[in-house]
Image 1 (tube, helix red, strand yellow):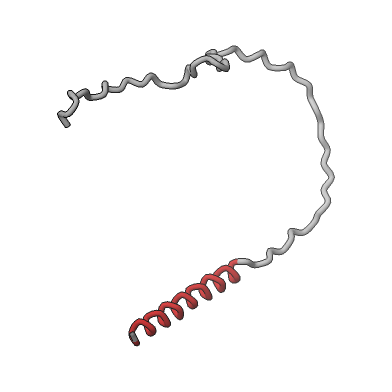
Image 2: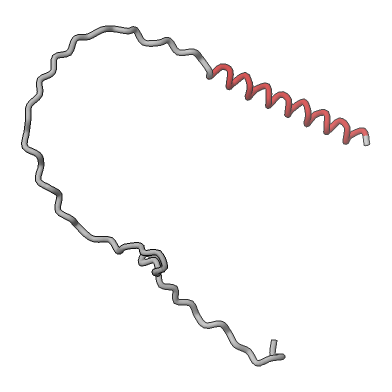
Length: 90
């Protein structure tokens, strides 16, 4: 009886210590970072026009998904037939 209380107290102290350690670790990692210095820069841009690229050629057509039709992406299932045993021969 007495050792059960001591074990519970020890577990409570160890658990509380673990919680405190996690809180302290979290608080130590949450540092406020300094904002970077704001600077102003002047940028000059020039634009050049180029011809648009040729249209992309289609590579492969995927099957269409139509409602009410079977899904063409599902694999075919080949399962062995169920075992049959005469009644009463279990």
